Amino acid sequence: MRKIITDPLVLIIAVFAFYPALPYIGNFISLGSELLLWFIFTMSFNLCLGQTGLSSFGHGAFYGLGSYGAAITFLRLSGPGSFLVPILAGVLVGAASAALLGWFIKDKRGVYFAMMTVAFTQVCFGICWRWDEVTGGEAGLSGVSRSTFLGVNVSNPTTYYYVCFVVFIVCAFVIRAITRSCFGLSLQSVRQNYVRSQYLGYNVNLYKFGVYTISGAFAGMAGAMYCLLTQSAFADILDWSKSGDVVMATLLGGGTVSFYGPIVGSLIFIICKNLLSSLWDHWLFIYGMSFVIILCLFPTGLMGVMQKRKKKKA
Amino acid sequence: MPLFSVKNLTKRFGALTATNNITLDVGREGIMAIIGPNGAGKTTFFNLLTGFIKPDDGKIFYKGTDVTGQKPYRIIRHGISRSFQVVSIFEEMTVLDNVRVGVQRNLGLMNKLFLPYHKDRKTTDEAMAVLEHVGLGHMADLPADSIPHGDRKILDLCMALTSKPETLLLDEPMAGLSKAERIRITSVIKNLSLDHKIILVEHDMDLVFSVADVILVLHHGTVLAYDEPDKVSANEEVQSAYLGREVADA
Ligand SMILES: Nc1ncnc2c1ncn2[C@@H]1O[C@H](COP(=O)(O)OP(=O)(O)OP(=O)(O)O)[C@@H](O)[C@H]1O
Ligand SMILES: [Mg+2]
Image 1 (cartoon, chains in turn green, orange):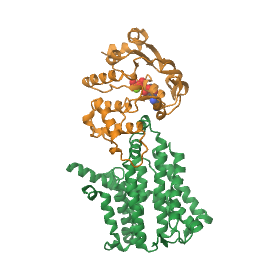
Image 2 (image 1 turned 60 degrees about the vertical axis):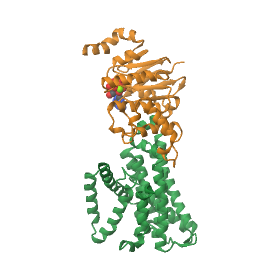
Image 3 (image 1 turned 135 degrees about the vertical axis):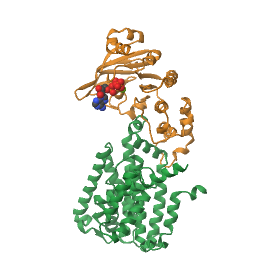
Image 4 (image 1 turned 120 degrees about the vertical axis):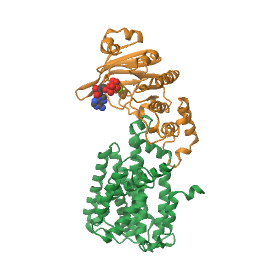
């Protein structure tokens, strides 16, 4: 029991269960949904960075393609009234595109790996921005709608918030279980010392490919649900800066040392984005500066600071 | 049949030939030591045997099977394992988890997506057994980067044992150790030699001459001598290239 109460994930879930009732911020219900989806997205990213050491700095590709996958499926195949099908399509597109890219770059490391993922995102952006017939080009895709799912009216923003909430809970526990599993330890070994890992019998490249595909599936799911949230898909989300945001949020939160890093980081990032940007157009300047300063002082991010304090107390 | 059979093995790094047309058979008996001055190509030879680097020319057979160009993760399935000259462990894990990585792989659990790794009894028991066998049991829960150098060296060796190899390649197991630690490792190696075929690179001549049944002397990537210890120490070429200098240093 005590273990459950002190579980940080349970705390996060408890807070978000009451999000719509929170003062002020609770009025921005779609901000809450966006937050939850960002948590899923950054957790999927951190499965690559924090767990396996893959600098997937173009991770927005899978989120974006998941979003387009859902929109196109909705508009061309499943039609109004569908809900689960476009989401599953997003998962599939995310996983498939990550698998495709992963297969070609599984033997790359460090900066080379990073640059290939960024380039891939750029290519995806280019395609979505130009291919008018399928992706709607610059105008994007709109006309996606939510109606009912399992008898529940998900068109209501609050109801949809709780759909995101449930999906987040499931994803968080699944991803956390993966990080603590035997497979997770295998991934850890790849990150910490891939040479030794090979000599213990691990086909390192295959693990990189595997985790990349899994990560792409979660990112694609988050993207698909984002598409249903905004009821549209735009090429903006494939912009490289979006991928950069994920990296910044994860590092700021301390993803390299903690499973909770991406959640903490996204929380700060999304709130800053929404609050600061309404105060001042150049909010990114402040955010970027604080990011640099914080990471210079605390390279392992906020969770790193917390862990160090805990250790000192012990 | 020889254990390793190497034919015309050659590896170049730019203009430097680190392994120069080596042809030799490694027998099955006892401990083999590889010696040679710094840069002689000893580690490169290990890297070639275990598939970490590909030879520019030549072939490697292990017990009659052509293993040339196979990656390390495949090589170890033949029953070959190695330790490292520069300690190569998972620095951010505990000592126990370092060994667990190898043990879970050997038990075929490494792809279990939802089995918490620290909860698997079999892995834990086996990893603890490996650690206790070499006297590291009491350090199991310490972070690997916090233990003394000698113990890190032993941990490195320990990890090589998790695949239950038949042949062990040890790259300078004594590097940087104190006198007491050297004695400890010597006994560990002697113990291992009872049920493993050991090939050992070492600069510590006391160890080499006390444990080796056969010695290979490398110099500038070529074989200078390959013989029993007393014949090697009597070899004039070896003396001038290597041992002579050691003696002069002493
Ligand atoms: N990856 C590499 N790239 C370039 N040169 C290399 C590489 N690996 C080894 N060398 C060179 O090949 C030569 C042989 O190196 P090697 O590490 O095999 O020597 P060694 O006999 O193990 O020496 P030591 O006793 O110092 O460990 C050295 O001159 C080294 O600089
Ligand atoms: Mg060497």
